[in-house]
Length: 174
Image (cartoon, rainbow, N blue to C red; front, side):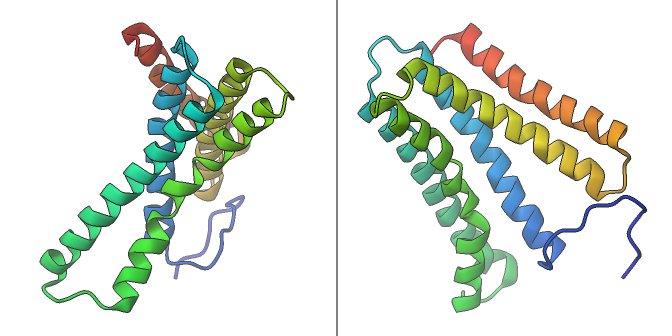
């Protein structure tokens, strides 16, 4: 095992490939939920129940599609039947697809409780998803040993990606 670069950030002792799979799923789900949130904020007749259902169904749909694809691809790729460890692995690596819905659903719940307006809750959810992309960029930069400035540049690029998704969705309409 090679030594880490100075300034690199350590992460839990999962194999890098598993961490990579989980993060890939989380980022993919963030970008998808981001597009759904923009659609909701632009919608004329969205209510709390509809917003929660849209986010939850999106996350469940992504997760289900990933499960089906991964569970079908593994036997082909590995030339053997799936065992419990395979299924556990697929469930573990795909779980971030579900977790991405938690923040927006909590914010919509706060809105339903009267803490903030629904459109505000949706915009805050959009902001937190873009901020999460920035955080992953920063963490990735630090993880590979980049200094704070270079990691911040990576975070800014990830933020730009999130903002492009927002802009394209706003320009295209829903």
